[in-house]
Structures are given as C-alpha cells and as structure tokens.
Image (cartoon, rainbow, N blue to C red; front, top):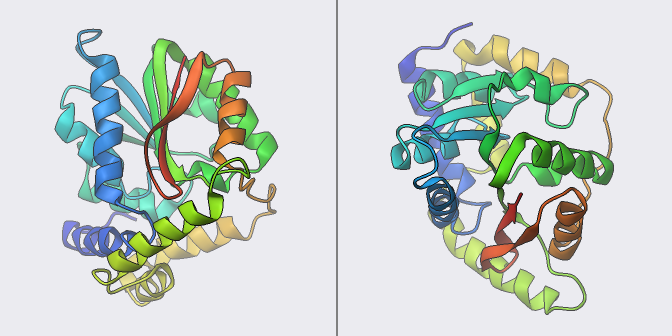
Length: 254
C-alpha cells in the first residue's frame, strides 16, 4: 500500500494550500504551538516526548521537529490515507500511529515509555462529542508529566459573556482574505484524490471506516466550556495564549 514520494509530495502540498481556507492564520498558529512546546521543554529533557493528536499528513509534526529536532513525536490519526501521506512525505518527523482519539484503549496504542512533555492538536478535538472530549482530557492529563502541557489550536467560539458575534465576524473576514490564496477547498481536494489510482486502496479503506457507526455528535463547545472541562480533568490552569476571532491556541498546564 506504500505510496511513491512524488505522489505524497504532490498531495501534501495541495493539502497545505487548501487548509489555508479553514484555519485562520494557520502558519502563525503552528508557530505559537511550537513556541509553547519549546518553552515548556527547555532545559528539562534532551529528548522531549510529544503526541500530535489528529495529525493528518504530518503538517504540525513536521514543523515541530524543525524547531525541536531532538523531540520524539508520536503522531496520531484514524484516517489511513492522510497517515500514509504523512509517513511517506514526512517519514522522519514522527512515529505515526493509526488509532481513534477517545476510542476504548486508544492511549495504550501510543507505545509511550515515559510521561509526555506535551500533547498538541490543531482543528481535531472539536470533532469529539462532549463525553469523549471530557474523557480524552482526563486521559491526556494522566499521560502528561507535572508541568507538561496540552496545546490545542482550534476554532473555539466565545460564549454569551463576550462579543461572540463580533469575534466570529472578525475571524470570518480574515478567513475570506485568506481564501483568495487557496485555489482548492476540502471537497474539491478529496474529489481530486478520488481520481488518483495510486490512492484508490487507501481511499476505499477510509470510506469503510467512515461507514462505521457514529459515536456521537461534535460538542461544538465555546471556549469557556473547554476551559472548565480541562480544569475538571486535572489540569492546574488553562487559558488561551493566542487568539484571532474564534481561532485560538489554548494551553492547559498539568
């Protein structure tokens, strides 16, 4: 099922472009996440251990390992096609693990031999339903060392205590400006993938997995609700360290 490097490079490059339509200031968000991980691991260990949750084709892992070349990154996703693109295009960035975040026994598949220094994610955890998200936060708190961090970059709306509608509008305006540079969207990217015979087996496996019973609806929680769940899960403190509209980088400290 292995892909050619040329195929992986082509589709990862197109992935990076189309993702610019959806993540406000995506590159800046990646940079902030790397800033946080670098800061909390500086001087503590020669080989930081980081898990990348919902890694896709390795976009965040590749950027992290450039900043922290000695880090051991475990990249997790349930999408077989995106994982294979990551393994082929960014083979040295991470150890890729095929598992579903929040599923029974998922943490045991990570093969960790010591506590995590950091868990990172970008635009992945919002897909979880509330119960799975709460359970996942507790599991991550248990995997992290004291002082370790969960760093989550995602679209997390404000609640009614803040100017939620205005914040959303600001983010939408920024996203509209970014779309001028993205010539492909999510749907057209996957439609093009379906026309590549080298990806046919991986796409068929992906469709088989999507056909499995749904485990719940995405929570779609506002930022304060996420912060409450993180504190309930055992994190000492949690809050945003960067925000543009609804796009946030939230840090929770174990």
